[in-house]
Structure formats: structure tokens, C-alpha cells
Length: 243
Image 1 (cartoon, rainbow, N blue to C red):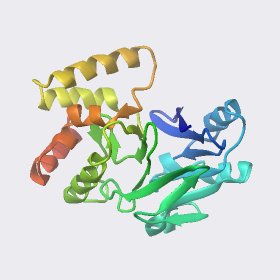
Image 2 (image 1 turned 90 degrees about the horizontal axis):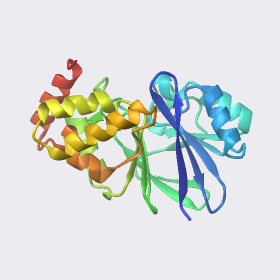
Image 3 (image 1 turned 90 degrees about the vertical axis):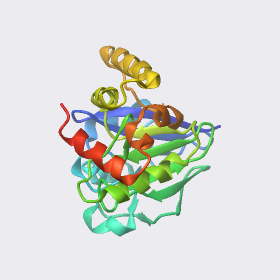
């Protein structure tokens, strides 16, 4: 048995992620920022919530965490290095620490760049899953609000080293705009063209474009494909003003 993973659309274009360990029934929500739709999603899956995993301090990822803790008695997990900007943590974690969800064990990965204290959670399994907040998006990456291009480049390299079948579970539905930028900077990439066609079809049906495999991202994401920091920085600056 592995993990059951479901995106929960919240706010305008965010995703929280409902996760259940199928062996034990233990559940978690990743980056909850809107209470009502998350409560509905939890109710549809049995009404249990054990953990709340936070990737970074931005309000559109944490706003409902305290309310959900009060409602369900769940424990909030987040970065020790950023505890002052997060809801009170029940479990403070650092790079390399293990988080447990029932029988499933995940690894904490420091990924500064979008924010200084951003972390991701990687659960090996069948298939493995990466909850990456605003570090890695499908066909994109987070803006550099607090970190440097070097930090984000290095963070993405760490994520790119994970298995190709890893499910990328990110924090926003930005894929269509990211795909347009990818086509702009990599017009001859057949994988980008195919992924964009797929994304357009999914969004036309109102369906999420994530999770997506890390292998697909390595073929289509210009930020993962950047060979060096200078190239990455140029791409990030260009994406910031791309329309």
C-alpha cells in the first residue's frame, strides 16, 4: 500500500494536498489556506486529519492551519528555521529530518529561494511523491521573493535528483502560463509542445494539471533544464515580466 493523494483547489489558483497512508489510514493536509473546501475534502475522505504539513510562511499556504488544528486536533509540522513566521509548530523540522504519516516516512528537504525558510517533503514509495509548495511548479518555479538565483538553482538541483517517477505536488495551478513561457524560450522542444496541448485540454475541462511526474518536468521545465546559475537567473528575470 502507498499514499492516496488528492489536490484540493483553494483560493483563486492554489492547491492544498490531502494525503492518506493507505496502510494505516493516517491523514495529512499540505499547505491549507482556506478552511471550508478543505473541511469538505476531509469529510469526503472519512473526516480524519492527523497532520498539517507547511512548506513556507506565505498566507496563501498557512491561513487555515490554526483553525484546522483546533477542529481536528491535528499536529502542525513546519520548518524550525522559519518558526517565527509560521503558526505555532507542534513538530519543528530541519533539512534531512524524517516526518511520519502512519507507516509512510517522508524526508524534509531545505529549498530556499522563493522564501528563505522554504522546505519540501519527499515520500518515497510506489509512486514517490514530492510536496514542493512554491519551489517547483509544473513547467515553472517560484519567484525569488527572499532568496537568490543561486539558492533557487541549487534547490531545484536537489529536487531534480529525486526519482523520475516522483509525483510533483505543487502549490499553484500555474501550468498553462508556465507552458506558454516554456514554448517561448524552448520553441523546438517537442515535449513542451505535447505537454502544452495536454495542459490546454485539462484546463478546458476544469481539471488540475498536477500532479505530474518529475521525469516529465525534466523534459519540459526550462528552469530544471537550465545548465547553470546565470542561465537560470536570466530565465527567472524574463519570466517575471513575461505576458
